[in-house]
Length: 119
View 1 (cartoon, rainbow, N blue to C red):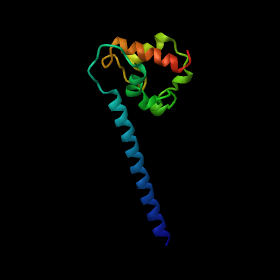
View 2: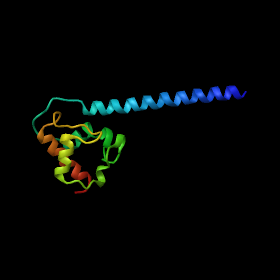
View 3: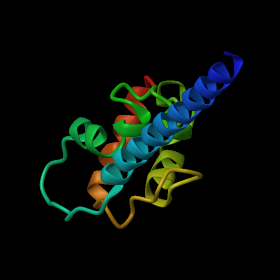
View 4: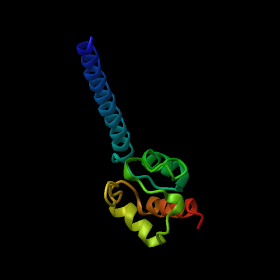
């Protein structure tokens, strides 16, 4: 009887590990998709749509999700230049977007991030 319980416990642990690894793989695939290189476009930039496409996977649509180590943008105290630099060059787990976005798109995202923090 005890042996059956131990066997069931081991099976439950394996199932939990498989589910956890699957969830992590799914989250990383979303991040990879959001950060994958796309052709640069010209014209007016819809900063909110761009944020949803490129940033919301980790930061959330409101900027406060904090997934995969992402910072809560609603309480950010970074300056405009610091935000622009971080979007351009990345930091820690955040990839650099310099080769994926135009200067105009980076400027629009910078302004949008300032707006999320109420500034």
